[in-house]
Image 1: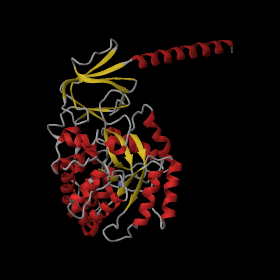
Image 2: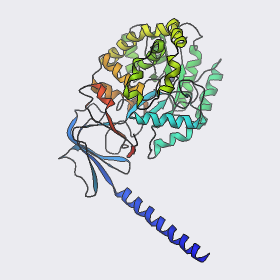
Image 3: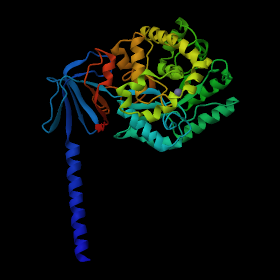
Image 4: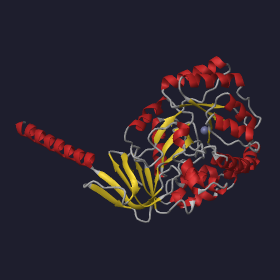
Length: 428
Ligand SMILES: [Zn+2]
C-alpha cells in the first residue's frame, strides 16, 4: 500500500513537472512563418519574403524579413514559395442541422462536426445566420479563447418571425436571453409562394434589435424590399438582390447606413445544380472531405427530375446572372462585399461551397484581392467581429498557408498547405 502511495505521488509529481515544463515551453514559444508572400487581408500590397510571427495564439509581428526581428527561441517555419493569408470568414453559414444531405438533425455534435469541416477548408470563422439553438451557445466561447480544430462561431439564434410585432419582438428577446451575436429576419415571399413579413413587424424587430445592441441581418430577394429594409434600419443584406439590377437609390441607402452585402451565390447554385450529376462531385478538393456515400441521395434520377421540374429551382438558376452582375456593380461602387454562402443547409457543402463562392465572385469580375478582402478584412467592420480577419499584431493567429498565390488565380485558395486557428495547427 505504502509503495503504491509512494509511486502514485512520484508519478503525479513527474506528471506535474512534465506538464509544467510543457506549459513553459508553450508559453515562451514564438513561431514564425518565414519567406512566403503575405497577404494581410486589408487590401494592402502583398509582402514578398514576408514574416508572420505569432505567440500565445496571437500575431505579434507582420512584415518583410528585414523589418521583423525574431526572438531567440523562435520556431521557424520556412514557407518560401507559399502564401500566407488570414483565416477565411464565412459571414453567412449555418451549423448543426444537417446530416448527410438532409436537415432536421440539430445537435451540438453536428455543430462541432460542421465547424471542424469549415476549418478543414481554411474557413476559420463562421457566422451562423439562424437556426441556432441553445446547444450552440457554449461553442461561441471559442471566440474569446484559443480555439482548436474548429472554426470560430458566431450565431443569430432563431430566425425572427411572428404574426404581430409583439410576437416577433418576443423572439428577439428570447434570442437575447439565450445569447446571440446577431439578429436575422426573412422578408421574402419565396417567389410568390408565401406571405412576406409586413413592414410594421420588421420595423419593430429592427428597432428592438438595435435597442439591445444587435446588428440586423435580412434575407431578401427583391430590390424594392431591400430598399425598404435599409430605410427601416437593416444593417446587413444577407443574400443577393436577384429580381432586377440594383440602382443608385439602393447604393445610396447602403452607403448611408454603412450596410454590407453578402451575395451567397452558391445558395442559388444549390437550388438547381442537382438537376444532374454535379460536376464538382469528382473534384478531389471536394472528395478530400466528403464521401461518395454522402452524396448518394443527390444522384437519384427521380430527385434530379424533380429539380428539373421545379419552377423555383429554374427561376433561381435564371436569376443567378442577375445576382452576379449586382454584386459586381455594388463592389465597383464601393459597397463592402462580404463572402458568405448560406452553406450548412441541406446539399450546401460546408467548406467546399465557400471556395466555389469565391470562384463565382471571380467569374463575376471581382479581382482576387477584392475577393480575399471580402472573405477576411471586410467582415470585421461589417460584422463588428473582434481580432480576426487580418494578419495584424494583436489579432488571433488564424491563418492559412497556401502552396499557390491566390492573386495569380483565385483557385489557388484551394492549395491549402496548413490551417491555423488561434496559433494551433488544424490537423488536415
Ligand atoms: Zn441562411
